[in-house]
Length: 464
Image 1 (cartoon, helix red, strand yellow):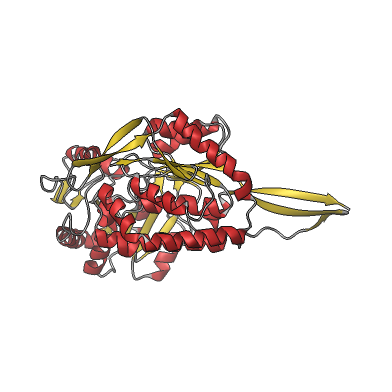
Image 2 (image 1 turned 90 degrees about the horizontal axis):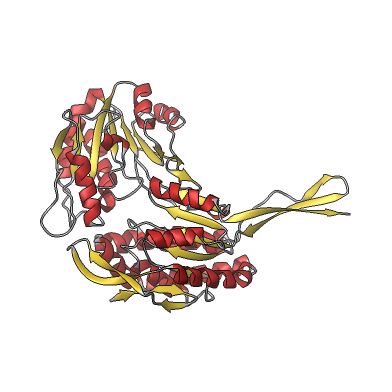
């Protein structure tokens, strides 16, 4: 099988291709287009040609199109799940019961949000002149999505952009293109040609898309390194940027928790999607009074997780090698309580891993593993917990586990992260913003903030 681009309402081939590998088996099963300058330009020009008419549609018309897309996604859930699972190795029930329903809900949220954009009231702020504000679509949007949630990240990108009246050229990760192309194929049944285009390819493809002079905005979900490269390239043509980048979430566990219950919840949040989640509960910070007991509970819960049953493989052989490299470079002070090795001889699975004895400046604390790996550090006071939590470049997500609501409320103001959960971790609501601070980027996905990010504000003043 060959997965093609989707440009101007239909599939479009490319001269170059790259292999597709099933990470659950390690076997090649097909190939995908690798777009170069001609294919990228064709997609961008299609989006530019479609923009004038699409931007003039009413919010109600855009709402109806997106609602139909959500219905189509649900109707083709099995087919979409097959495409997603073949390239990610995810657990089928998770894709069908959790991810696709969330995607449909997120599309429906933005369908309604398109009709609810607000601005300041019109008025006479200068005598004899009436002012009002318009929220308008930005134009053609270049979007780049990662391999950990191919379908969901595509939805997070296109739904607000299309709802606001923009047109889109989206490049998915080279290892996971199929579910995005299938989404575009379904969208072609309800959207005019050229409104939603997909170009497949590698880093060079992404660079060509970002540097193309036509797109007015670039939105990427990816690593901090990739975000820096996008921001640098986009600056050359003064494009707006929306960066949702890496995470390295701290989990603050206090000595009043139910140890077993908290450990089980944290392991679930750490190993969901094999830990390949920018909000994964990776850095567990535990009060010294319960440190040893909590480590034992984490190890028990982690050891009960079965690769291939409870979570899938890592995305690629390179990703597995990268994580094993991090573990191989652990300092002598570290203790690997469980895991730390490849699981089995087929596919790219990693054993569920718990590591303690690390210092704040150790590589595995400062770097995002993006794997089923939990590190544990000890703290003795609230101030020390906050210092350890905030002591990394990333600032996407965090959580606090305590029965003391006063403490939790106070600490939420001190954690330098865009998301703070209390006694839970990883839940996402369409109505709430998702985005971080620092090296985790800027801009928000989901919520009305996500929709507003894909608009520009115009001041109109009329003399009378």
